[in-house]
Image (cartoon, rainbow, N blue to C red; front, top):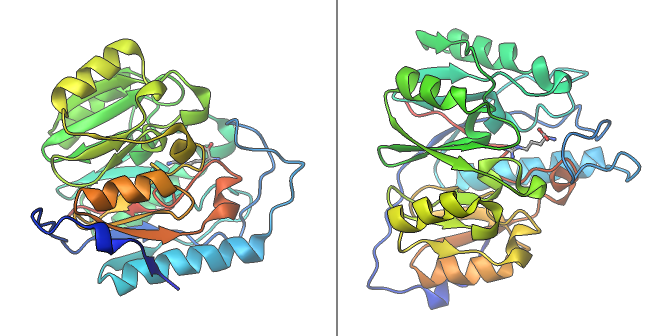
Length: 282
Ligand code: ARG
């Protein structure tokens, strides 16, 4: 079911350590592509919802096999994008910064996310003032919060995220509509390592990222075209689309263990494994 790929090329001199994670996922019971809010979405292309559910179940089983904890958010009819829980909040040190969606079609997802955290006992759950699409555009790397803008998240949300979550923010500008969320253009592999697609960023943001992460793994356009960067790492295992073959090899070469999954149905909505996985950092 889970394929651990090409560990033979793993460099033994680079120890990579996994830490147990807690994730929030939402079964794609109502998944559909009914509107167009990103270039991946084509309502005329049929979606196989049963297959989407099976692929999602495999993703969930993969996390469980890796020893992680998976919490479930109840799906809501009429919210076909709710499977992409990464967009519903950002959680750092037990503080929950809720989302505010750019498009009316997804606005209804924000409250169920906040309510889940409140019901789960989180005492600091903040409803934001400015548009931010959760971990779609806010990525934790060590003590730093990478913050995307350009298509979805309002740049004013970056300061809001910094003050609510108590982290330094590195603002980054996305320029290619196919990579409309930061998590389609950057994968966080551990506290100091990222993989990325330089072309997805403005020249200024490319400079900032190169300076900050000189050892970053560079993805190929072919990787990015299957949302290969939409990956979930526990510091050692990197769960990513199995179709991203160049990235799989490059990640393995740096001592990580790539774990390929096929979420081809979720790709029709413009999302991959990471979009369907919200990390709960308590
Ligand atoms: N259809 C969804 C949207 O366009 C896909 C979201 C994908 N999520 C992500 N974290 N990139 O909003």
